[in-house]
Image (tube, helix red, strand yellow):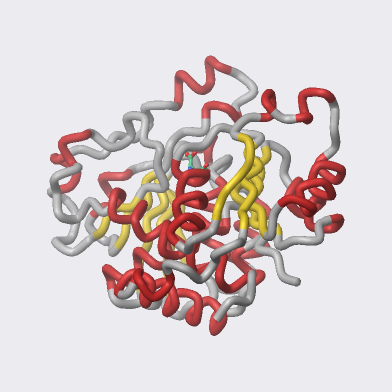
Amino acid sequence: MRHLLSPLDFSVSELDKLLDLARDIERHPEKYAKKCEGKKIATLFYEPSTRTRLSFEAAMLNLGGSVLGFSSADSSSAAKGESVSDTIRMISCYADICAMRHPKEGAPLVASEKSRIPVINAGDGGHQHPTQTLTDLMTIRSLKGRLNNLTIGLCGDLKFGRTVHSLINALVRYTGIRFVLISPKELRIPDYIKETVLEEKGIRFRETDSLEDAMGELDLLYMTRVQRERFFNEEEYIRLKDSYILDKQKMKLAKEDMLVLHPLPRVNEIATEVDDDPRAVYFKQVQYGVYVRMALILTLLEIA
Ligand code: NCD
């Protein structure tokens, strides 16, 4: 039995297969409409979510399966003090697969050790968010036509942003990848990622605090929200929350075929005036997220 806890749990060739399957689902959804009949997914969300939880649920429903779960820690037995290990043992009796989001780094890993069903990490604290990464890879591959030879700007909260951490881990396995890490100095990428993922693997990157300076060289700009819930200090959040606002003016500095991605939710780091720009693909990204989660469910349940 396999779980998905980190984007590295799949090799590059397994990922390619998964993305091919997602593309086939996009083209021929009717072929897959009954593949999961009689199967259930449990969505165990101890932290708020709109997209991720609903996209898992939509994915399972599109496959003909059904869904159960909870969407906040307060409405589950966690509020009574039940451990993740006990919860997962019980869920294993109710469902065939589960997706778990938790504020504590490593909670899905702990769950997987006691689980009798595949566990998908749907975001653990500031650590990883592998299914967002699958979504991002599908978006890039579909709209850029490749996952190599790209200069990628990652902008915003690079310290706490788990989507960024997972995406870097996944992309360094392709060739010709260069990163421009755009953040205020307080929200720079953690040293453990810089040292063990970027420097050790000889990946080209530079750090800057200026979005304007970086714009012209980027093939992709991955914008992120300042992660308010992970700050220890509200004043610091207020000081940093508007560090970057992508607007029409800044888009003029970008290449004509640069794509703007965002895992969403957006607060105000992308002005709504950018939404109509054909290079803004964050709402398309949401749609790819459903196909890729359908492909993931089929893969982990070993349904051909
Ligand atoms: C992200 C997350 O939860 O990490 N959202 C998502 O799943 N699409 C990004 C965020 O909350 O800023």
